[in-house]
Length: 178
View (tube, rainbow, N blue to C red):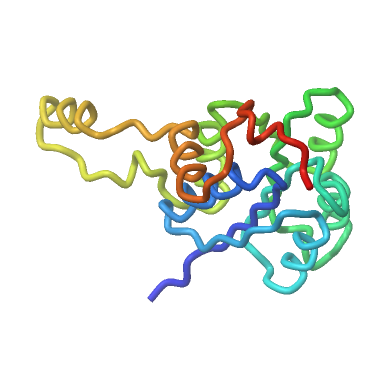
């Protein structure tokens, strides 16, 4: 039996974290989750994942700083890193490139941006390529139209419903914490 490859995803956005975890598991990956930079760093040292995805702005540290620590460590520098962030400033992008980390902008199509990078880095097939080929074009067209399109927005809605997380902009989300 082949041991599944492991990806560590570190982000303080719980809904996004869970949505990405679902998608990575669909690719057959083992998933480690961290909600802050220090936990991510501990996981990397202890578990040695095959890939690390880091948000930039997290509690207890910064994803770029974690990436710099990994890049400077002889034992960990070969682990590929994806920086997943909403930041678009030149400094952030420059730091990603200087550490050979992949820069992925958080957006509605974040999974469509991440999946090909993950598949290439881990040498695995995408969800699209894992689907059995149909014998004729009509069967392919029918299967594609019959299959529900599972966008990241859809996954976030499902996860919010299952975990009772408020939707963005809702009164419950904007209520002051106690």
